[in-house]
Image 1 (tube, helix red, strand yellow):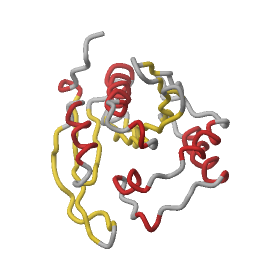
Image 2 (cartoon, rainbow, N blue to C red; image 1 turned 45 degrees about the vertical axis):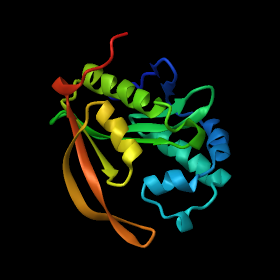
Image 3 (cartoon, one colour; image 1 turned 180 degrees about the horizontal axis):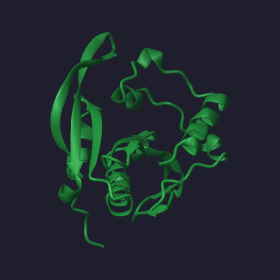
Image 4 (cartoon, rainbow, N blue to C red; image 1 turned 60 degrees about the horizontal axis):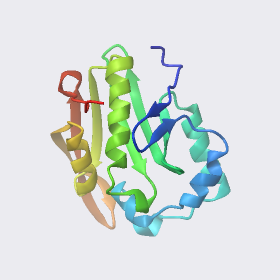
Length: 183
């Protein structure tokens, strides 16, 4: 599959699709919940309410990205991306953000990751997907482990959040370890 074709990926509870300019309004409505951004490494005192301009930039960054999807239920709730795709070494990294606090803990992030992993291993023929996560983000770590990711290492004191240094876990999944659920 060519990297220039972004497929729509459909699950039982979500749809992953390419961003469109009208998504800026939905992104603006989501706001920036400090408890979510803290799990991504942003100190609460650095959180600023999104503006129409920042929402439009967020959408444009997704549009410009070769493998970025918005996560949609009955509305936009976040994003998921395959970053740093290297077709020579058949690897990429994954990034995800569920931005609606009401959608946390419902398995939607896990479902989005599984859809992207299926695409990465089946369609793009990648061998390895990696992800990095703050060591204190237990919810994300559990989700990644449900998808088959293993903790491969720790990068010490990589994020300065709330006046303290925190470590990142480096997690990885190989194509032969991927075990998608049966339809």
